[in-house]
Length: 177
Image 1: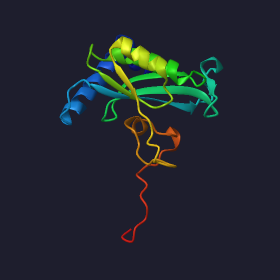
Image 2 (image 1 turned 135 degrees about the vertical axis):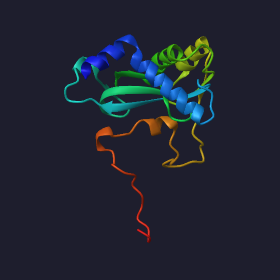
Image 3 (image 1 turned 180 degrees about the vertical axis):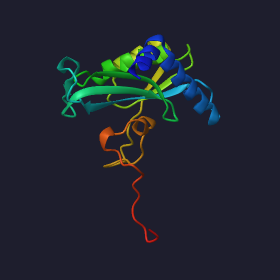
Image 4 (image 1 turned 60 degrees about the vertical axis):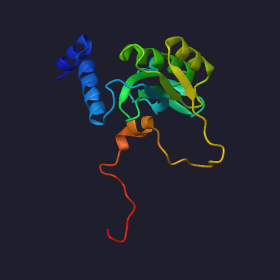
């Protein structure tokens, strides 16, 4: 099995299959094949036990030892580009690498806008402008206090604890149940 995985990874077949499935899903939702707007976000995750220590780090802000994964997703939550770095890498550096991967994974001038959170700073905005992508930092509404229940497309694309996912949706009990 690994033979085929390695062969398809090395010759690009796996990426071609991923792109075709993504285009088909976008067209099913009456969207153009390539997105014009993407959402960029990063998440620090604990590294598995066998991961080499030279590829891991500690996210000082979140106090998480492990790796940082960055995702670029479209408005449907479909993954366009991925980058995995040590958790000690700042969001700016991850965002710059992610923008480079995004431009390599999509046709020229298809992605025109990227939405990012406040963890990404001016370096990402400037790099996006150099690539022809308008990077907009989305700010939180100051009237909203506490937990914001709305989840971004990237949050839907990445589970917070992949090994502890519920097997079926958790719904609150009702009188009918």
